[in-house]
Image (tube, rainbow, N blue to C red; front, side, top):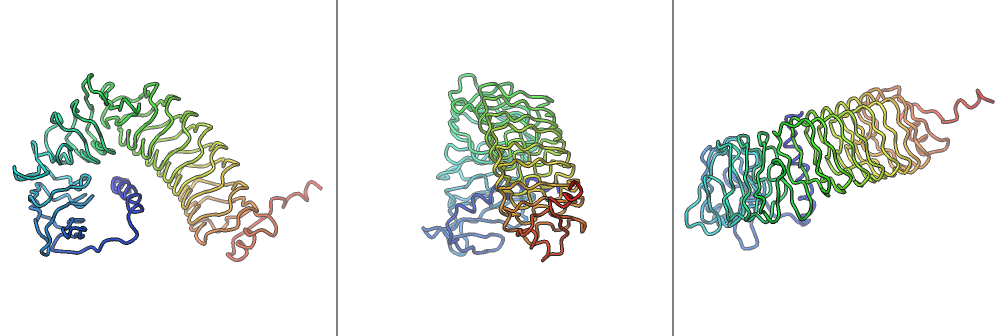
Length: 437
């Protein structure tokens, strides 16, 4: 399952993009190995390539329509393509449609191409670096001076790249350009750069005081984020192989989604009181994480925040937390104890699915809905205390839980009626009061 993590993350990232699109989706057409849509000007945008050619010559026409654009992720994950030739008809390329093409070594375009250029096998669109081929053999790369922008996923999955130098001409770096560059050890920036800086090979943005990227192959076991940093970028520490401990200063106010995902030996971390949200996937698949101390200002634990943290045993969720997102603690196999905050009013679908050492849970009084598969696969769960505030329990809330599971419910409550309808064992909070009378 872990080998699929890269694609799981990309799929999750694309959900947000899909939600922002217009309700009426364009019609998708198929021509040979290509899928495409028609743009308002009647030209075609390639949205998917399903072929297996090693040396790919992208067509200039599909079904009589001029091909003018390559859409986001159109070639993503194709492990057969070695080279790609782009015709002059294509004038626009979305954010690295070639992400994860693990065999890709170089691009070619005509010298008179109106918007695209290739420099040393690397694809540029005007002054923007679009794609550094994943299988390009060079270990060291200096981005050409004059380049102004590094695009989304531009260096994604570049397995040979060890060292990158960013020129002073760069004025913008898009989201997660170095994701899954698993051998990257250092990113260099000139001391004269007006916008970016590196501190011992770690990339920062000066004006936002933001940590952009900690190279995955740096060999430090511990790292202290510099005091004064306000923000940690999404995927900033993704797949850092050696880090066991990260110190976050109380200057940090925002940790973006998936910031520490897939750090395989990260064992402990303290979130300072300055941080108010644990965003989506923050510790996704941190498989060695055992201790997390959450600051007392946290209001939300986002979707998949601790997904597959299989060594996480106990967690105290501060009373400031009002929402636990979908799949937040899913597949936390070692989790034995969760103290729910008293102000909690929402728990997402599958939030505790497959926490198969979890024994008991007390649901706080503000909860009104027990959502879909919230405790599915909790094979040792023996009792759950359900307050009177609960007015809805999903049909699949307790799928694959033990048949001996007992819900502790209030008399005349919705939960009591649910237990009777579903044949689930129940008891009352005051069931043993008679012993003391």
